[in-house]
Image (cartoon, rainbow, N blue to C red):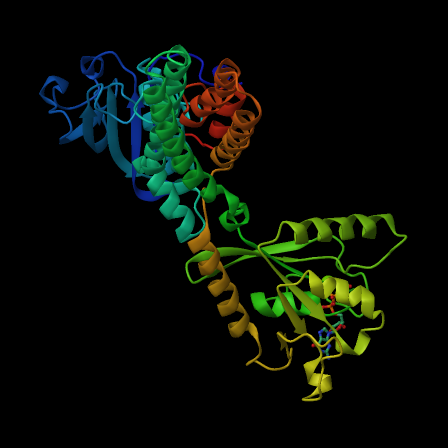
Amino acid sequence: MIFDKFIDDSAIIACITGSGANSATSVLRISGFKSITDFSSCFSRSVADFKPRYCELVNIIDINNEILDNAIVSYFPAPNSYTGENVLEISIHGNRLNVERIIDFFIAKKLCRLAAPGEFSYRALKNGKLSLSQIEGLDLLLNAKSPLALAQGNSLLKGELHDLYLKLRESFLRLKAALELSLDFFEDVDAEQADAEFNLALDEFTFLEQKLFNKTIFNSKNLLTPSIVVFGAPNAGKSSFFNRLLAYDRSIVSHVPGTTRDYVSEFIYYNGVEYRFVDTAGIRSSDDFIEQEGIAFSQKLLRDSFFSILIVNPLEVSDSSFMQDLVGRADQVIYSHKDILGEADPNPLKVEDFLSYNFRDQNCAFQILLNKISDFYREQSEAAGILVERQSRIIQDIDAQFSDFRNLMDLEHDRVIWANALSQISHLLEELIGIVALDDVLDTVFGNFCIGK
Ligand SMILES: Nc1nc2c(ncn2[C@@H]2O[C@H](COP(=O)(O)OP(=O)(O)OP(=O)(O)O)[C@@H](O)[C@H]2O)c(=O)[nH]1
Ligand SMILES: [Mg+2]
């Protein structure tokens, strides 16, 4: 649970740069100390002279008065810092041992403890510096594997989407108020005006709700780590194709059908996107338990894929209904064994859009294929909606509840019942904005973060 992880609100320290490798510089962040004077004995200059949000070039001095490192220190007094607490950011030489030694030095002086993963961002959330959707944006940004995720992470962090969520909630509150007003005045002379206000608020909420809902219809999930699945019948030449694509022998190739059992995957970076290419077990009916498991994996990977490539050996297409089924699930069909078939029509399946791959020929279909995947990715990105699954799911729940509400308006004339039906939407909106966040939601959101974030 989140509260076990973020034990108390004492000062915390972590290295906020790099992945633990040696580098020219590393930045340490200390957050949550009471006063800058706590650090009086740590630096070569008086901390009282540190100008907020300016860089100070100082030496870090250990208990024997020896210089630990030469550092650039910036002091961000609360509340104008990332966490909303007093923060020190200290740039030091980025050798790993140096980083660990200096972190240990501050901990040994009892000035702070080591931060838990995500704890800085959690404090920023707790102190109202970042909203839950901004934290989710930060996560998206820091783990982005494509320009799309980078852009949406940035936009979330800037609060653009959050502003739309706030507008939706404001509009909802107006709708709720208008409904209550129309309840009070229903039998009264002002009933007409109250009704008009209610209809106006209803139109406004419908417009904003639809605008957001449209951003969730497109399944953007597989755009985050797009996987390209190579599938087909056993012995079709999947692994040979996969190896040629990677330009090294990653998968075992043999003439024995059923050679690839467990799937094999590798990343290929192309046109700014990191694609995960997956070589899978050949699909067929099998009595072998291990092979069955491999085939089940192939099917699942295929279902979750962003793009699928069916490899067909035209010399071995016997069961055409089975093949037609596979073709129906492919975004691209590629024929192997072109070197044997030559220019003869290798198209027993009459698939219009196919490529053929010649594993002896350098100028084969790879470039065309990668460009096609890249174009497909760009197209999908342009249509993509909200990438954070939690937000997308809540908006879809709001949409379902709201359409129930509209149906109720047609069926039921008692407006007190309408008002009750709105309360569920109210709760969902609070969840969307992050006013209420259940522990398990926080657990999931912060589960991805590592130390220093
Ligand atoms: N001549 C020729 N042989 C090929 C071609 N592609 C694959 N092969 C051969 O076909 C056999 C099967 O190739 P694999 O790449 O292991 O086939 P696979 O689809 O991965 O097979 P499984 O892992 O068993 O499902 C090997 O002997 C390859 O050398 C091709 O384009 N031309
Ligand atoms: Mg194989």
